[in-house]
Structure formats: C-alpha cells, structure tokens
Amino acid sequence: MSKKIAVLVGSLRKGSFSKQIAKNLVNLLPSDYDAEFVEIGNLPLYNEDIDTPENVPAEYTTFRNTMKEKDAVLFVTPEYNRSVPAALKNALDVGSRPYGQSIWDKKPAAVVSVSPGAISGFGANHHLRQSLVFLNMPVVQQPEAYIGNVTNLLDDNGNVDDRTKGFLQSIDDAFVDLINRY
Image 1 (cartoon, rainbow, N blue to C red):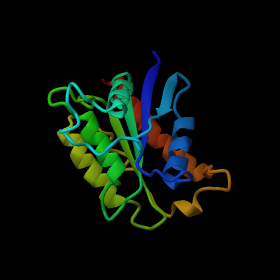
Image 2: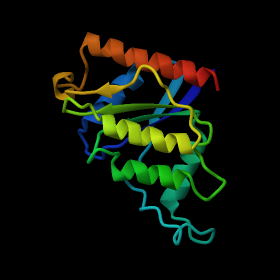
Image 3: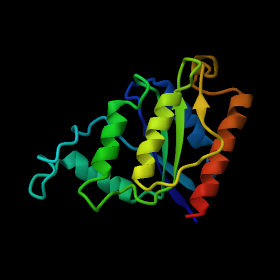
C-alpha cells in the first residue's frame, strides 16, 4: 500500500544542505512511497488572534489540509542557535492548532539534523524531538540521525557518497519500519 510522506525542511535557503540531504533520503525510500516537500516558509507566524473561524490565513488552511493527507513526516533540519529554525517551530505550532485538531497526532516521524560543523545539529535534533513528544508523534529512535561535516559529504550535484548513502538508507529503513507499525 502506498504511503504519503511529508518532507519538512527547516532551512529556507534555496541551496540548503538540509534540503540536499532530504532529497537523498527521499530517493532511497521504497518506490511505493510518495514523498512531497511541503512549504513552510510562507506561513505567517502563529498568532491565535488571526487564527479565528472567520479569518484563518489561507496559508494555514493549505498547510493543515496538505498535512492531514500525509501518513508520516520526515523532518530534516539545520541547527540555529542550538535549536530548530523559527520556520520549523512555527509549522509545528500552526499544525497543532486549533486546540484539539492537531494534524500531528500519532503521525510517525523521523528527525535528521544536518550541519557543516562537527556537532551535527545535536541541539536542534533534540529540541525538535521534545516538541514531537508533546505532539504525540512516534519518532524513529535508532539510528540517531546527526549528519555532521555535511560539506564534505555532498558532491557538486548534491549527492552523497556510498558510505553516507548506506547510513541514509538505514535511517529510511527504520522510518519505513515505524510507519508500517502505525
């Protein structure tokens, strides 16, 4: 049975390392998995004053409806100031509202952090996981997915070497296993 996967990339930069790694991960998913990169950069900052039944921003509605159709979520993010980028946190907030209508509930997830540095986005990875616990999302636990020194792993076309591809495949395999349990 085909599965619909949402891919949320924390970096909004056009040529982001996170997006390049996300594309590599998507290419390694089983052929019956339909992955879609879902836009989060256009979402107005969450504000309950503008999220009213009479005046819900169109971007909120589009995002929520898109995410409701997905079976699982692949989060790929850089680390900004030892946490997740504001756009990604905002997407979590928009999707968790209105109260009692969270689009995240029980949706399997995988978290991959990406960094040109050696710490590999450890802080962002764990801050994101903390939010996902509250949002009731089962998350891949192993392998832990920290991609450090990413500039040494990507070629000029954004592809990874065979060793890295093997690690990314192990992440996808664990993600697929988690999805199949829900």
